[in-house]
Amino acid sequence: MKKSVFAAAVVASFVASNIAKAEPQAEVLHWWTSGGEAKSVAVLQKEFADNGGTWTDMPVAGGGGDAAMTALRARVLSGNAPTAVQLKGPAIQEWYEEGVLADISAVAEEKGWDTVLPASIAGHMKCEGSWCAAPVNVHRVDWIWANADVLEANGIAMPNTWDEFNAAADKLQAAGVIPLAHGGQAWQDATVFEAVALGLGGPEFYQQALVDLDPAALQSDTMIAVFDQMRKLRGYVDGNFSGRDWNLATAMVMNGEAAFQIMGDWAKGEFLAAGKAPGEDFLCASTPGNGYLYVVDSFAMFDVDGDDKKAGQNLLADLIMGPNFQEVFNLNKGSIPARTDVALDKFESCAHTSAADMAASSDEGSLLPSYAHGMALRGAQAGAITDVVTAHFNSDMSSADAVKMLADAVANSL
Ligand code: BGC
Image (cartoon, helix red, strand yellow):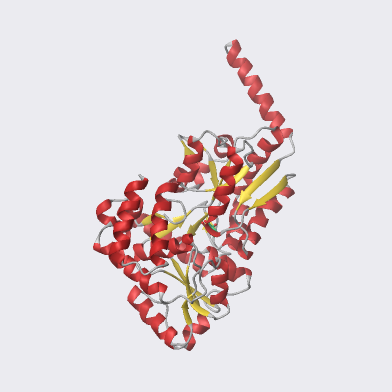
């Protein structure tokens, strides 16, 4: 061995053993503050403490994580990045390109992450070939949740088409029930919009319009139909929806004030945390149409000084991908494990549906990244679409005007 190579190897093993000896510390930025979310993140906090770690919590409330991302930018710009951050999709790559992420390949390679993750998930976690994030789960976005008693009392079955949904909603409205629980926040409008786009347009249309940003798809008649359906849905929402948090909308379904909510399966985490049973108290079904919109929650580690923090990052990365954590966390969170080797025996029926549909969609080529939850597009493009969706939902803008505005906004964001 050449002298310099030998010296480098000695330094590397000295650094590694110092990190191994340090007491793990982590300041963790996340937006998991609702009942089900808090219960889920507590699983990680406990495992970290059980392994000698000291966790400093940095929760930034706000569904979808917009506020958390603003807080993150302020911290990084002031040269004081948190140790670990809930981050996902292209945002991981965007931060990597700014040169501020730590490399967690040593843990990933030692634990063989490549052998237990689907290639599509592993792809999101790698930056130029090295591992830059650790995945906790797979959430599905395109779900409808319903209050079982309210549907039964009104003689309504879970809808299989958007026309059936509209007919059910009209019937409920006539009976004095709020058909759709919704919180008027931009990301919630976007969540509903992408489910409608997938449902009415199909997987290919979704890919063209909301992943490839194809101008023809963005201005198509199909997109007009999507905005028409959004206008219909606006009519099924109660008058107090503006600014309402998503979990309060879930609570409206839980207590029978409203019949349906269109939301990702973190909503199931709320039902379960409140002791509600699927099939009895609440019902789940994918929104009408084919395909599966996924979100993978993950943590990226930021480049920070200090052996204690580096030890914290290694420990967190290792725990996050641990089979026990992936099971317990996801039982609470409403999602399914990212690891393919975790048995689903303890999971309820909606999680089984999610896993089966995910496998089938993957085979059919209709497993698609959620644009509304930061999996498909860079921040500027996703933001441009969401601004139009919200502007349309909160005004009497025509579908034709919305489509024109959408195409212009996307073009200007590129
Ligand atoms: C995240 C979920 C979270 C939800 C509501 C989504 O973007 O993927 O983990 O529960 O937002 O905050």
